[in-house]
Amino acid sequence: MNSDELNHDRSGPTSPTQFSSAANRSIVQSQAGDVDWTSNFQSMSRHDARSASAAFDASRFALFPEGVYELPEPDAGEPIYICTPLRVDAVFADQSGTGRGRLVSILADGEWLRIPVTNSALHCRPSEVVAKLVDQGLEIAPDKKSKDRLMMVLKTWTSDVRLQTVKRMGWVDDSYSSFTAGASLIGHADRLPLTSANGMTSGLITRGSADDWKAQVGMLCRDNPLMILAASLAFSGPLLRPLNMQGGGLHFRGESSCGKSTLLKLATSVWGGEQIITQWNTTSNGLEAIASTVNDMLLPLDEIGEISAADLYKATYALANGKGKGRARSDGSLAEQARWRLALISTGELSLNEKLSESRRAPKDGQEVRFIDVEADRRTYGAFDSLHGAVNGSAFSDMVQASLRHAYGAPGRAFVEQLIDSNALHRVDLRAHVDRMASGWITRLPSAPDGQIARVATRFATISLAGTMATKFGLTGWDQAAAHDAAEQAFRDWYDRRYGDKRDAVDAFVRPLQDFLKANLNALHDLRAPRTGAEAELGWRDETKAYLKREIWATVYLNVDATRAAKALIDMKLLCKGDGKHLMCRAPRAISGRPRLYTVNIDRVTAYKAE
Image 1 (cartoon, rainbow, N blue to C red):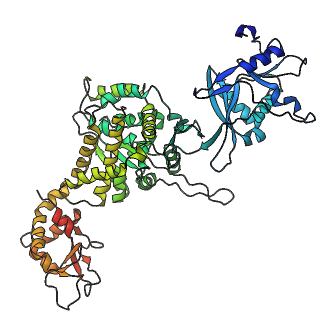
Image 2: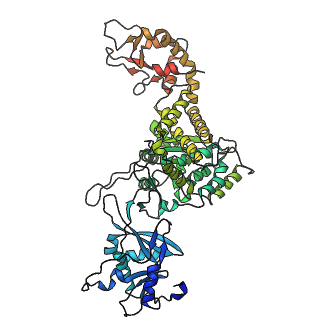
Image 3: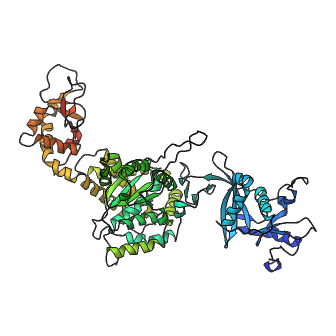
């Protein structure tokens, strides 16, 4: 029977016999193309004839190309049109077996749209279910009983396909075999993302393909280190959890119209549209909700100048630590705490330090390494080095942003697909690779590393790894070594800005202290040795520290300002600072009377390379 033999009037086919024959042969392809779904319902046992719902027994419904019909009893009349094409593709539940429902698909504008419907809504709020389906494009017959018939169709249609719902974005579990981004599921197909299409989630979408992004956007990053750095940062989000790293990222600081907003939009395009970009002045509760929405991906934050210093102080810790506030439900039980781990990119004309100083708060080391400051206005053309034929930096920025409007969202998903398909997260020890890279960079610095330097180096090494892997996967359009070179250069630039002036100040004071330790370290009384009762003439030492008396310190800096020397050495963490305003620390308890002494970090002083 061809389509012309069907009566396409919504009153139904010409006869029940024709209807049944057509229904048995009708096959509908799923939107994903991975499953063949028969158009008529599965065979189900009839309800008892005495049941109030017997007239709506599932065996009396069928799906035709033009819609769902109720089949009459033999010789009882024509099939009754209910709605446009609809099917139940699967049933679902969460990991604990609750939150059960059906995955309903409707045919609207020539495409099958999948809509999850919970069992509780079907049975307790049917009008909401109808409204939800109609809003998505389902058309229902105008008679009063059509809604009841539709509810009976949905309640009695089951499926052998079982899906586990996922409410959290990013990696589903530690197997790293499934990943959710917006409404997309990457990897194993037995998961169902349950996410709202509102707010930021609506921005986690794609336009164009990964190849389109590479050709139109990635190629413009060539010979532009800050663009490569920003895009590589965006790719780093899915690596943080496998690397067991906290969230964190980069703050691109620069004058107005230097191109920093273009860097922000470029990084954003790896995962979706500009709707993802969030303003810094969002409330703390809002930031929590947004952060959980882009878990394992990228959170772009614009204009650090718009947030108060007090709120910024809290936000930098909360965003990087990845935990929301503990909240109680109405019954007094503790609600599930929001959690996230993500890459962060921020822009502004002020640095983190400058903004925090507005509240007279000195930034802590932990905050600075969460949002690493990157100068975005010191390249040849503001944030750019190569204009790819544009007449100036502004024109190039416009060129990049025009390209971003036609290609976004696909690269991040393609990156995750490659991570899953290559099994790289299980096959290769990526953390060891990151640590070796960071260690190599640190050993080439003039000063010995401290915790802050090591953490910043590790962050840049992670960004390097992400950009390099994306290039190996064929996603970027830039050279194989470009991400590594851009990240290492940015790390050294950060070090020079962070320690450059301090190095200039301390270089003149390191050599006298190095010479003293070289000549006298063994003469210092070893606190690990048995006590002899003899007076230590020069001072004391243990495994890591040398403790020098005030008069000895004065002889080391006999011809210079000994106080100025101490301050400069403290700034470079070569000398330990005392409490309050004191330059000297209280001696260890092993030293009688615990006098204040100049406390020297032996390893850092001996390793320091003075220019």
